[in-house]
Image (cartoon, rainbow, N blue to C red; front, side, top):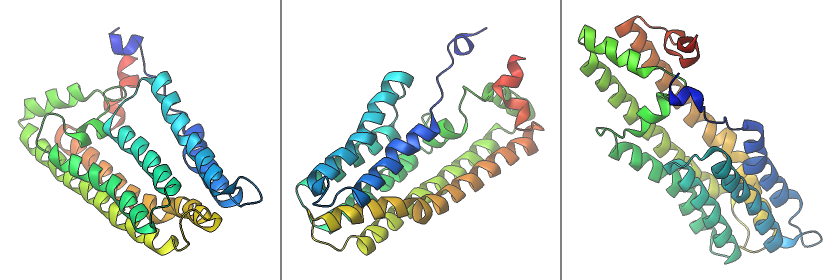
Length: 237
């Protein structure tokens, strides 16, 4: 039994993540930030405490640090600073667009390097025996063809983040209309966060899913392996 099998990483609690990063901040900003309740400043501060606390908790529990987590944490901090300093809505829109834009640039920058970000995302060695795939690709002389397929997939993933950047900016400009620092503005921030899932996450995720299925379909064509054939759990048995 190897070290990876002896010390499996603790899986993230998806429901807790959604609650802390989306549900709680949205409810606080849209329902509890009026002058009669928390007020715009305290409402924003308390809303921000949820994702920030979760980010620290996730780091302590899972020891998981990556560029996407850092960008997400930075996004939360910037939202708080922009709101507290009452910067114009345009800057919120720029911030919303900058995070997926930065991720897309990182994806492009790593496309033809050994630290290809898409490779790390798609081929998690905790759950997939990718060494088995690469050994077979070497045997059949298809390793270069597979690498080109992964490169193509990486470009499409970058496109999905660039699309998300444009949609983020557009959504922020449409939703944020009230003067900064007002209860209405805080409520609009909450509305923007609530709408970001159906408006932005769904189309971007759809592209990622299509890319993922395309890559695994190509693995099956080149090696004959199905997804079940390369799962680590199966190989342990």
